[in-house]
Length: 269
Image (tube, rainbow, N blue to C red):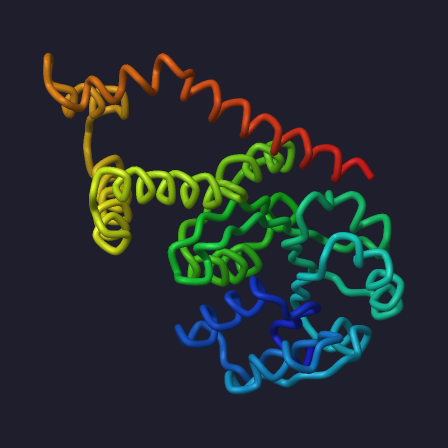
């Protein structure tokens, strides 16, 4: 039976709002084909201007939507599952961190298909990175096209096995915080060297942007690019020596490892 809405969204927090704005403002989907539910009236008010239907009835959203995007906090999923199970949704897209597909399937039942996605904060400005597991939808090109295009509006999509989703969390899901911390540290260092905070911020932010663009567009490996900047007896190599002596790479690796371990702990609850 044809559903009234193409996309239903349960949970309308920061990331769900970014997905909706990306999809609707890019004309991928019309607002009238989307229904959104949330317990917060202010969250619903934030997306009403997009022309979507809003309500506070999760079961109604699940019953009347072809694709159901679940964007609630992981700890709230059990309660939501009880509400939507009666509607027997067939196609679920989840952006809940640490909630495995089998947990969703066991809670919903009825042979539901699940696509799991790990977006990140830059999705809110159209420059996101998303690891997505499409496995349940591989046999249907229409489903694959819809889900891929939904996320493509927010940035870059990488298809991954679900077993790698914790690693995705450690690199791209949580990674923006590492980048922000690095930028903030560069700004502080610039201020310590006599720059104003605004000057240091412009220099740091645009250097990180330029560095990333160089990696994307260069045929050289990242280690080769490092060597290109490090002239023998020059200034950069002295900075790199300090980073190496203080185990910069190990610090980054240990940080990602801690993040991945926590992601695994949450997924096993």
